Image (cartoon, rainbow, N blue to C red; front, side, top):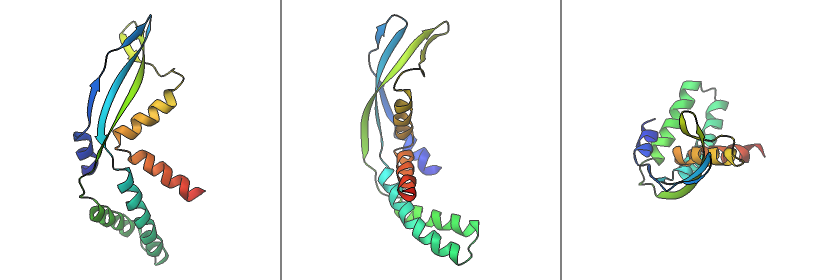
Length: 135
């Protein structure tokens, strides 16, 4: 959690000018954020190889968790590069004012992009890693 807090502390954003069309609008938001995705892939790759050995030798959950922390601490410490991405946020006017619209055609893609930004690309790395394990 300390690592995630550190990454979140480096997140910056700049809200651009809205384009309004009646009761809908789009707002460009430029995010600058830490790119820790490749680190997470390295950590998971090394951890999985260690975890198999530990699990086969009868290690309990506590030992497996300690192994993950050890690998994480060993890999963590680099000064991570930042990435910049601009997302176009769809909005809708309601009786309570302007709100982010979840009914936009690209809302799932936008949610995934925003989740990657907010997790410093760790979410995407975990998804890719899991997909690689499954097939």
